[in-house]
Amino acid sequence: MHNFSCSLIFIRFVAYTVKLTTCQYFSDPPENITVSNKIVNVTEGHIPEKVLCSAVAYPEATYQWKHDTGTLIGKGNNALILSSPVSRAEGGNYTCEASNRHGKITQKTFINVLCKYIMRISVRICMILHTIIEIPFF
Image (cartoon, rainbow, N blue to C red; front, side, top):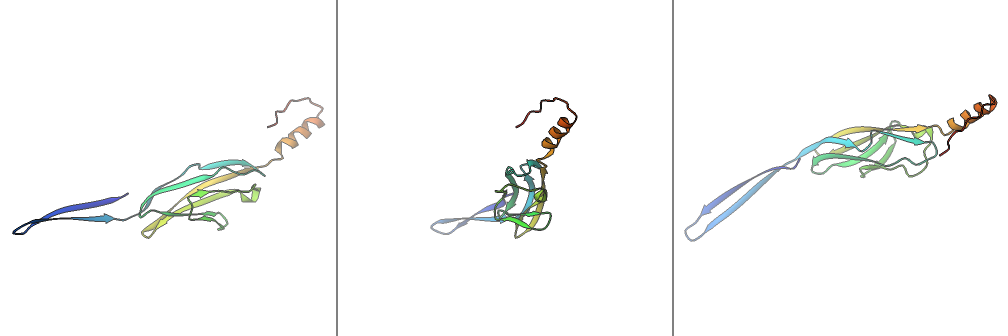
């Protein structure tokens, strides 16, 4: 939060009055951290949607994203953007850290990478059983 207080002082001299305003700003560590999606489902081989992280802080927070493995994914950007198709190994928890000189706070999102072969296995099982089933493909 942007907390501040100001005081107004009038000093009178013989011929004129001086008006002084002093303000004091209070700094806050990041708080109220949120992510736009706590769970993102994505099929293996596709690109997941971006996840935005935000926190309230003064001075303004800086952001970084890390995967469960400790790998730094992005620094200085509040958006988690995986710009290439993901594998199953890239699934898991991603942690957003918002920080300023007064502290830091974290929030997690989970990238759930779905196996792309489940539909094909189901079709093969249906063919083996000689069952005619219509399966919608997308």
